[in-house]
Image 1 (cartoon, chains in turn yellow, green):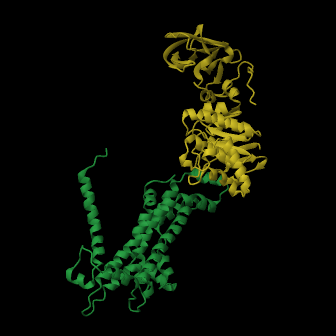
Image 2 (cartoon, chains in turn yellow, blue; image 1 turned 60 degrees about the vertical axis):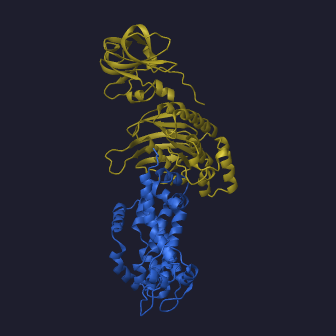
Image 3 (cartoon, chains in turn yellow, blue; image 1 turned 180 degrees about the horizontal axis):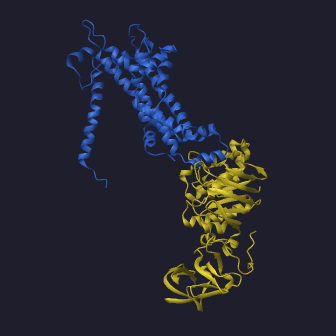
Length: 360
Length: 280
């Protein structure tokens, strides 16, 4: 068990004009489950691989359990990694795959056996111990890859998009398994994914990356309810937050001619207004919304349409009748305001504290 | 999709006959006596001298020194074949390992230099090679026979392509599992390359087994004679009224055919796998 601290970590590939990962500062507490999330190419995998020691650190410092590991071999960093394509040794049985790392560390035979047996029991791999990876399904291979990490009893688990090769249903169940396992072992974990849903459901804290920089760090609900920028707002949550061009004018936030909410702190000028699809409700008066088409999801329906020529998605109760034109209202405290030029959040009313569900 | 097409089969059958006929003729003719062959020419019917001919070929001491038997020659050919195959695999695997997994300057340039030598046949460098071996006093030795031909561009090329197809994550997983370069090679890469090694083994064994020019240059002592030279030797006795031992030459040729056939049959399943699929 250990904490991981990143201080001013950057990575510049030789010949690249700009750093791929830039000036990252992050402290991961002991036992915490941190998810790095961002679009492809945002540097999240590079960051993870720098922690693993598979990628050289251009500048900055990585500490695992208060030991600077910049120049430490991956094998000696006391970490275990789960790869996207599992990276199981094809010629070894499941048992040998899990034991290989321990064998290289000269762990006594009896202990290897005990640990493998324990991991196999935990991951329900018992019947497959003598099979080759080839003879296993995707989900089973994934569990073997996790077993290989678990038997090592490392200070930290590193996951590099471990679920993206699985089909949707399996992904959901494996997600649960990873979470359960991590809770049970209490091992510090760093998890990379591009799937915001996976990120939301797994993380104690989320780190949203964009173009090699940290956009926001926070619990899933903090990030969902208080996105620090338009990038985070549009990346986290499905459907993505609606971002509308609006303006602040004489104490009102407006989209087109419709006044959304009172706002005294802002001067006059253009702003970007963020509205979550589920925060919009039909009202007697408000935004004039023209319906284009409807996506039925069962529990709710997503109504796509536009307001003043700007696209907008509204989540609605399936029981609610839809007409070609609707009026939409929103609670004033659910209106997010961002600067149009920088995309940064503008705190309007005193930040409304929401009872974030405490993650145990 | 898979209709039986008579024409295709006809072509295949003709092809088989075309390939097999000379072998059949050689086998059948080798069972006749030398005089018989001299009078009647090649034959497709079995004669009655099979056992004695083959026994003679294997055990009769021949040559100028009267020391070489067919068995010695077969043994020499075998040493050459195995030496080539094993040596080339070991050398080209290590070379490819260095080229693929170690970052050093000019690695790509070096690979292309190696690759270009693929285009040069042995004959081009046969004189300098001979000179070097002669200076090293390695003429008339197995080392001299095998060593200069061990560097194999073909092998290096195949192994390089294979190693490149092995996913990088495997290396990374092994690194995290605490395997250094040597351990990774022996624990992971070597077992994965089995099919590739089988393929190269077949090619190189046959190549070594069939060597003719190089052994002829390198060795003057008869105890180093290979089967290929033996066959030639038998037919070189056309002195006076002697009839060459055609039957023995054929028998020797048939014997020379067997080991490569056995190697191919044993390794063929791996061979095909090695050349077609990257086994992962």
